[in-house]
Image (cartoon, rainbow, N blue to C red; front, side):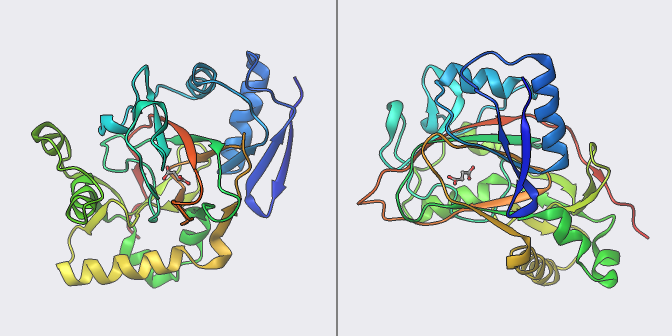
Amino acid sequence: MAISVTEIGATYVAEIEGVDLSAPLDGETVAAIRQAWWDHSILVLRGQSINQEQHIAFSRHFGELQVHSVKDWLLPDHPEILVLSNRGRGGVKPLDNGGAYWHSDMTYEAKPPMGSILHGLTVPPEGGDTLYADMYAAYEALDDETKELIDGRIAVHNYRHRYMKMAKGGKRPQPSAEQLAQWQDTEHPVAFIHPESGRKALYINEGFTVAIKGLEPDESEALLARLYAHCVQPQFIYAHKWRPGDIVMWDNRCTMHCATRYDVAKYERTMHRTTIKGAALCHVAAA
Ligand code: SIN
């Protein structure tokens, strides 16, 4: 099957046409999609009418799947699928504006995910876009002094901080002892070399990065705040406006994303996400 790859809006985002994910894919098509994914960090496939098994089967072409530690959001029969739905579809707990903060998925894992594949099932007619930041471009645009400051440094990531913040606000149930034990600090380079593209990218996110090692807490906080503000400048952002049936697949290592708000009382927004396991990241050596 010949696919077409067209850049949309930004060089790091492409739309793939000529693929029907409800039918089995041949090796050549999978290889072409994989290559397009390394060339463009974000791929959009419109109008995909697929069931859960087909979503999982497509995702498995790119690696083993990562199951989220919060079981309340996983489809009971298909725990590889995380449901982001304000109506709590499929027997999962409702999740209003679940990913409405800048993050990359599950960076608190020792081997953080390489990518995620999100399927828009029911989308609001207004609001609820997903914003994506290009972390290659954000790294490349840093001044030399900042690159020197961060290259070779390590950041600490943890899910506990984010979850407890939501739990204190009444937006999440209290975590179990098992979850708390699972949410340990993990360390990743602040800037890393992407194993497929060889390009350097920033690897910090507001969701889960809690500190930069080797800096005083206030210095670390100030540097992270400065880096976050830098990454979300308009020139680094692609805003995806969802249509029902859209698939967006992003390279989780060189992008951050943030769901935007919508009227949760008026509209339904139901998305299914799979996440693909990755490998440990290789840091940019200090100058
Ligand atoms: C996510 O944070 O993985 C999902 C983003 C979205 O719901 O738009």
